[in-house]
Amino acid sequence: MELTAAEKLGIIEAEYSIPIDDKLRKDVSAMCNLSQGIREKGRAEEGERIILNMHRKGYTPEQIAEIVEKTIDEVEAVIRKREPVLA
Image (cartoon, rainbow, N blue to C red; front, side, top):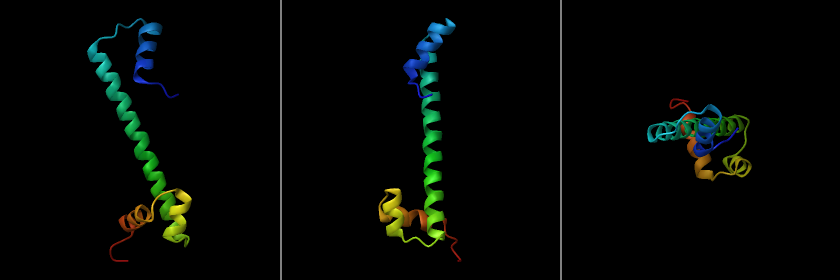
């Protein structure tokens, strides 16, 4: 479930009767930012995996870019980053 930091703090205060102070607000905000960063990294890694899989199957960078809605430069950067240097 996607809740904002304010919504999570409201639940902590209302349902668990835990007083909310500035330190707790900062901690909850930090945890929300961390979880968002983890989700974004996972999505980026999944996108790279899809690009590389399509590349291995013979799709051109132009075809991949159109399908994954990225620029050709972005697709080529992913492919270059993951190809072995001595291949």
